[in-house]
Amino acid sequence: MSTERNWYVLYTAPRAEKKVAQRLEENGGEVYLPMIEEIRQWSDRKKKVSRPLFNGYVFVKTEKNKLWETLQIQGAVKFVNFSGDHAIVRDFEIEAIKRVVSTGVSIEVNTDNLSPGKQVRIIGGPMQGFEGECIQKANQDFFIIRVPSIHQTVMVNVPSKFLQIKD
Image (cartoon, rainbow, N blue to C red; front, side, top):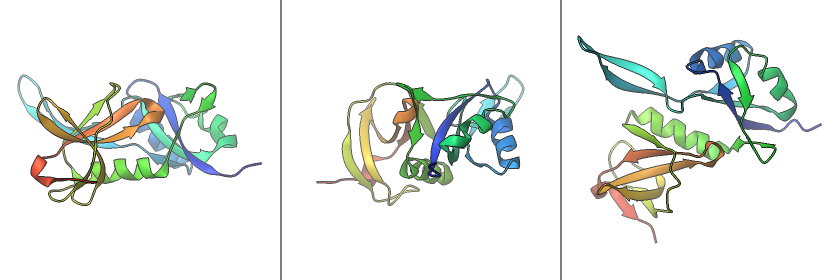
């Protein structure tokens, strides 16, 4: 039996991502729940809140034969499937998301099917050293990380002065 460990995408009950990730970690699982901070405005105050980057999703690194076990966690709903196969997120996609989140830059998530962008290297700012794809939207440049397994794209606005087009 294969003991290859991959990142699978676990769909959770609404607003249960943190609890599910915590329960999986308590059971010794390897879990990644990308969190971002944003300012929320109420009528009487502003507050910095932490929220999941992808609503309803937790990434779990495990073996295929242990997926059923993972689903026994309270709040876990199902693993994301495409045409009968479990969706797998590649290590480099997880690493890219971790790096972007760790910079603390403002991040958007887009579910549109975006056209391919230009290949760029970021040469300044908090994301210096990143290489990948860049698109233009509303006259602004956005560095993007595609996460095909959940049909979502992480977008970070990067000033054009920090972008170097790769040949």
